[in-house]
Amino acid sequence: MTEISVTSPRPPRTKPPRASANEIRVRILQVAEERFRRVGHLKTSMADIAAELDMSPANLYRFFPARQAISDAICHRAVKEIADIAFAIALMDMPAALKIERLLTAVHRYNRARLFNDRRMHDMIIAASRANTAILAVHLDRMEKLFEYIIRQGIEAGDVAAGDVERACPAQAARALNGSFAIFLDPALIEHCLRYDPDSDVTLRERLRIVLPALLPAVLTSTRPPSDPAPSDPPRRSPARPAPPPR
Image (cartoon, rainbow, N blue to C red; front, side):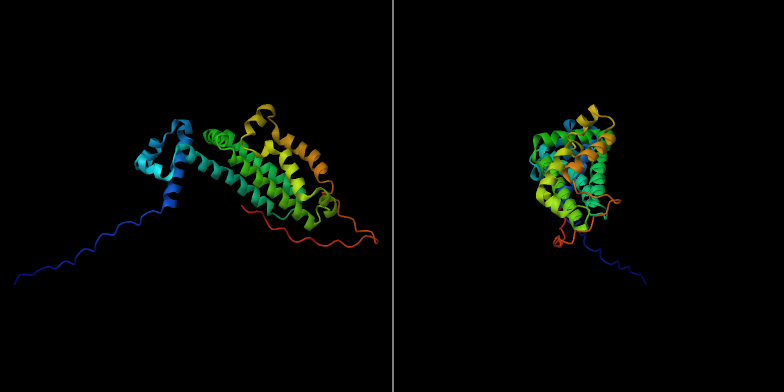
């Protein structure tokens, strides 16, 4: 008797899930950024990026109208990394003056490290920010809001005497602080800063010693606790806890 083997039918092939438009954009930016780092943004065309993605240039143009749009998006992401570092420091539990010093030092060192260790990306950020000035304007506005948040936190914690700062307004103090240290915060200015001042860390500390007492005369050190109000002084109303600025 002949045996007949019966094989079970193969299941139908399923197509891999189709990537969303957002996932494709993220992938395009990843590939473009890697190429910018390897050969530079000026030596990269839309056709080069499309070839590395194994897609047609026409398909690439569906997501980004030009190479400049890709550069802008990568630049936005790069300055957002700086903001994330600053935001984390703004949320730390420490006196306002120390927090401002750490924030400025961390951002400055991050910008400096990118200039020395990732020069092609630094050059791309400079070119993109010159073509689209809103990128760095948004970045500096974000830094200003972080400074204001730190000052308001300092008022609540007693690191900054509320009465003195209220006369100047925390927002105005933050604006002045942002302007005084823009050369340390703006990635487009780091090369200029280091060209004329190789020892910029020392300069930053010296400027902090001069500028902070001028802008915030009531910033207290850990060895100088706030004095108790005189009996005739009315009790201060505790300010509402400041909400952190949006990232």
